[in-house]
Image 1 (tube, rainbow, N blue to C red):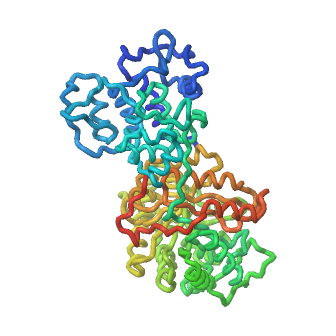
Image 2 (image 1 turned 60 degrees about the vertical axis):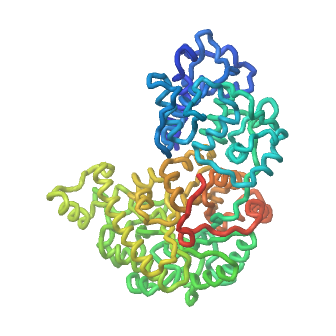
Image 3 (image 1 turned 45 degrees about the vertical axis):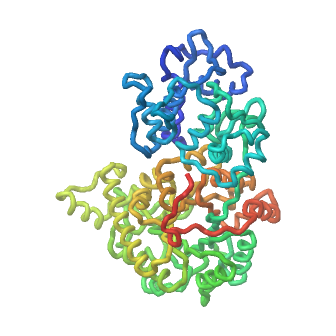
Length: 605
């Protein structure tokens, strides 16, 4: 998936190299630089050049070893990080006149916390910036802080750690953890007081913007061991598809013990899928005629009545308490149901449709229908199920899925059309399902219902976490009318576990850096859903470990794996090897972050 915002962010930084005054960096037609061949930063410089983003000097040189002044650095920061929030008011520096070419950049760099002044209210715009000053600036403006013990990290990583100024130690430790430290020719020498060159500064900013995807050789990037957090979500989804973990109490006991031994702290067992509840439900009995069903119609060779008489959710909660695991039931199917389910047969007026009158959509080879989220009877049914769980069970929360929405081609049933006409002077909905106003109207209706859900869940069980496991916002809103960014902004979600089932690490990182994700994690714990495999899509342990490392490196609140069975199965690695791999990721116990227990939650972006 191409992330236009991230590309633009990177592009504008690179343009900053051509925004320095002409006298300092004259423009030149796009052609190969004559002085970067064999340079340690050649790969980075040439990558930027081939994208027609930076210019060199008129004589064809790039001059990578030339210094960078504070004014020039401010200009680069201004263009590189346009979305950084201002944290303080602007000031007037006595040595920066109002007509000075870099005054807008100096002002914003100060407001955003990247740069400060000197005593006497001076900025010293023509002073060459040192390496340590550049690192401190980036860490300050990007609001990074070290996770590990700073002095220990610096001593382990760098031979000249003792020469780092005391004021900069925390910042250099944070910069090391964030992969901002680029040292040439000796990786173990910071040379913190040395004047930063154009190549140095370009490398630092490339690392800040691109991280693991930077074209710089890893031979020159200081890679700190990623600290193992003492508090993070370590979750696993438990499902009844391609897995028998829920089909017997013994299987559940073994799974919960196995996860606890590997230092996990959360399970999300499915409680609603395929038109059935997986726990004894009076609500489901009344509406569908069946109180529970553990086995899906996919398992044709398995007894459909398997598990009758059990209360899987009650057992999971008991095992969770025994082993120190939080249990947050997962409301998997949301408004979706199998087309041939008893729920759909008994309540045909609950089913919404497309503009051509069709109701069924194919999910692979499985026909699905969608309950109308705008219909009051549907809303009451979904709400009754949720309230039944948080009222009758000692759960730690409830997790809503990406299916708590509606595919955007739906909403043309008689009830919804009539409702729309009532609110639009008798006009029918647009025939284009992606019409912006039509998307917004339906998404807002779902948001209103989400607000009601949140309010009533918290009234029944104030300590139950209202968790959400959505797709990325743009896809979620445009294709499923689930505007979770708005839900989070309105305080209707207390935990997010964002589904990022990506093989490409670059795309994975881009999704983490989306502005709505960064905004959410400032308010609530945001974990990342990682695919550990599917029956037809094995995921190597190396990919899983790399993605967990990135999540930690970026300071997110933890991870959850989809799903339990694939953590050990369907891979070229043995079950023992996979288990050892998870053990290496989670060598210690960790508390689970929770806004319920900590109202002052603040992530470490």
